[in-house]
Length: 139
Image (cartoon, rainbow, N blue to C red; front, side, top):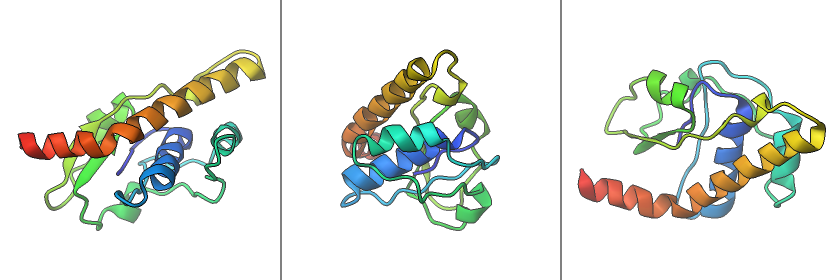
């Protein structure tokens, strides 16, 4: 799994959620072309559901470029458009999520956006094995 060129809050959240929920079926990685640090609000809202992403670090796509991925999942529209080519048979899937770090307002309003995106990521990960199976069958 790979998200590219987006704030670490979505990449780390998606990787952390996938490892937490589907670690028995998926091996998840995250990286980007503009690695940044973790947003403490992403760490906070993921921890509310028992997912610890505090130890994650921002990685550059070059750090994972030699991994023979089966699937590459982009999690924002810019990533989908700029996703690099990975060697091997990697299939690229897209799941666009809003950037919660771009939310404006009072802290609780911004945290509400982080929580909504967190919940959307959870729903995506819950369906991911079936989505990947369907994608494989169509290929």
